[in-house]
Image (cartoon, rainbow, N blue to C red):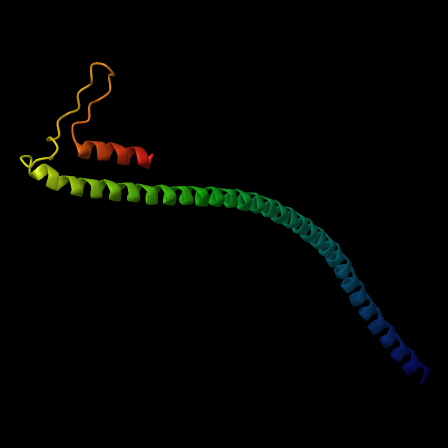
Length: 150
């Protein structure tokens, strides 16, 4: 019976030795994988830092671009207001000129009527002053309207 007990003990020692070798190989793989995992984690950390720096640079660039766009929008709004004002003013001046031209047409249509202005002729310079001579009421009204529009 002692032989059987020694044989069982030898089988158990061989099984233990077999499992110890397997465990040692698994631990070797685990150590090797741990080193690779540490390298992978270090690479991941470096990539994360680069991504964070890139994001920060993008944020800075977008903030600068946003401020520049805001300044351009403000300038455009000021120009829009100026153009709207000038457009309104020019429309009023055009309406006044149109009204003056319409009121002068009946006077020009009947030159024989007493008190009618002379037909429009090119203005000629006065010899004394060098300024053009106004020939009709319509010309005077037109010049007055142009001066008021300034």
